[in-house]
Amino acid sequence: MFKNATRLISTGLKSVQGPSRVCNSSLINGDTFSRMVDSVRQFSIQNTVNGQCKPLVTCANEAPCTSSPPMAINGFGRIGKCVLRIALHEDMNVVAINEPGAKIEDIARSLKYDTVHGTFGGNVSVKGDNYLDIDGKTVRVYSEKEPEKIKWKELQVEYVIDSTGKFTEVETAKKHLAAGVKKVIISAPSKDAPMFVRGVNFDKYKKDMTVVSNASCTTNCAAPLINIINQKYGVDFCLLTTVHSVTASQHVHDGVKHGSALGNMAFSTTGAAKAVGIIIPEVKGKVTGDSIRVPVLDVSLLKLYITVKKPVKLEELICPKFWECEMISYFNDKRVSSAFIGSYCSAIVDFRQLLVMGDKFLTIGAWYDNEMGYSKRLLDLYNHMVKVDNAKPA
Image (cartoon, rainbow, N blue to C red; front, side):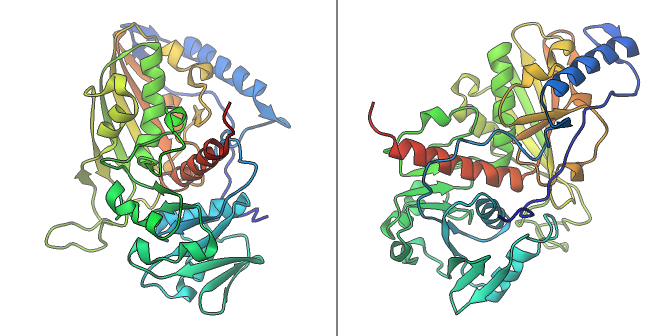
């Protein structure tokens, strides 16, 4: 069902051609680096399906819940639309969306056609005044500005993914509870809601939590990587910079307070550094960072600059086994950002960007689809919550 709901990309690991690298004050020549790459290739051969390397778009799914309780999406912007596409592709029980101020015909067209992620693979049509028909599945469309006014209860909605970016604190997000839902997942960092990142702290979720946050796309990329480094070497300090694609908060033309998103790179802040310290308490106060917005529609690049407590070697970092985490992928050939559009991975480590200076300073570069990958993490959190919420006492 909905086989073309997302654009799939595949990958093969190839040897890197290029100059030698200097690390640990010694020269790594082409032969040495080739041997490293051979180990990468051998690992990839052991992890192939029908002779093909696993596509970057896939990563291990959060084990699906046996039943899919009714869920809804509040906000049908970039994230809301990606969440719906993936949920339909995976036969999840999405029963409603809420998008105030938009005509239902425009919502249908927005779902069907997307500049970044291509044409949706299913049939989408308007059914009456308030419903979409998506390959025979009926989805109710609301148009309410305030969460407490949305009639979630009439559809017995249990879980809401709030992707408006407006209701990011418990006090505002819990208004959905007044409308009849049981749980709310915020698609943004939160000052006071518990934040969860898959591969790092999903195990901290408890069934008595009613409003939770999936942190940010950048946090979902950074936290698993920093967690691995901290577990293996210990983190002294970490500086992160995200080279981030444009977002809806930017503007096409110059304004009094802003420059055109199309014609400029722009320095900005990021809440990812602080969020990482909350999600990984051992590195609290050790991570800081910033953001550079660049004029591309999707896919961002995270750069991590880390000083560690224990000695580290480049050979260790370039081994795929080092990055054994279910949401992390890797590659070592030359690619540009658009190659990763549609990837579900939280982080795609670029082996060409792994550097070590001395023995306690390292650099990591990782790509991530800040739309589709993050949307998949939202649904992973939903799946995890459903399993925990419905688990029988031991």
